[in-house]
Length: 208
Image 1 (cartoon, rainbow, N blue to C red):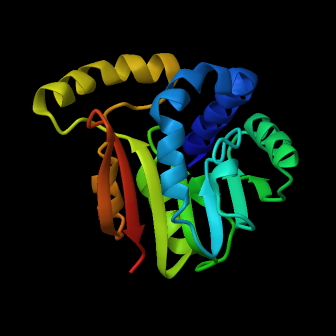
Image 2: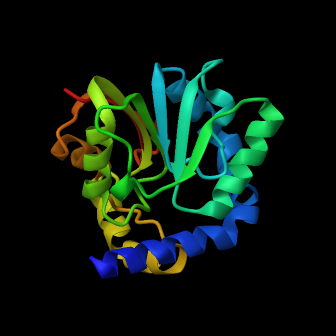
């Protein structure tokens, strides 16, 4: 278990280091398509909402007005950016430093969970998905926007070959089969939409 916590600390430190530059580095993709995908996904959020990996707060402006939102992230540096955005937007989400793999919320707390481009970086995605199921109410919905391994056999093989290098250099895994992991965690996948190039999936899942 200690090794798992050490690895989580490495992830936290990495995102703390890049927090100030994170939005700048990702701005080209936001302008091309990510902002549109976020807006569509988050229009589906209802009730008491948990955002996992809230990061710098890129999603904050897309939630329905008056949303009852709690956001968590492993990086205090990223959360400071999110808090600043919330102040500009005039909203007051609850923002807490927390690891999705070991959340301290009681079971069946939330109606909706949200994660956007998170599970490519979670160290133990099965553990994180299990925790989301635990804190979601029965009948609650989990909304995902995620990078995944291509379903094209050639492209998928290339991603497999490149993954060790990409993961070592910048952190995320590019070949995770996240939709299958969501099903394996016990969720019922209600919709699975292509968000672009076959490597971005927009998923709505039910906690049965």
